[in-house]
Image (cartoon, rainbow, N blue to C red; front, side, top):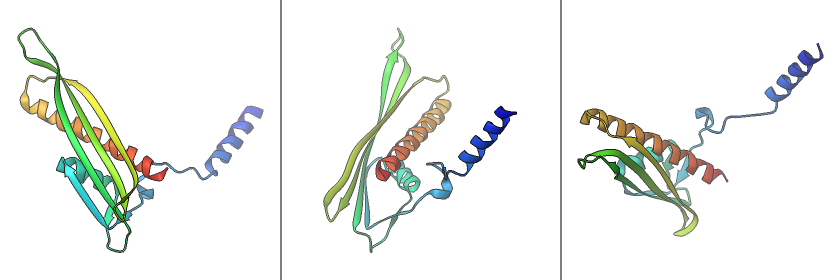
Length: 148
């Protein structure tokens, strides 16, 4: 009986403590910036801007620069010289500027290794999926960086 009472009290206490998920879509804040400058991989940059909720607005004092690079390398080969393992790395440099002075800057790197596929279409689809997942991780890291 005492265990049940303690469990109920803990549950009621935790449910009313104001806990909110960090990555919940409801709490996604829109960040107003004066200008967004993108360099490097266009698809990756656009996805990051979309996930961050960056909106260009002339009344803002902040500018954002995002430089990203995708590196697809051969990690291992078999005896015949055919690629067996690929390594995909995405490097993103994020700059938050106030009147051309850097307020915050940081470089984010995510990488993943995956096996080669027999079918090139399957390989391409898997590579796109890995790229999307790495981009999502980088966007999450940028959100945490901006909130700190």
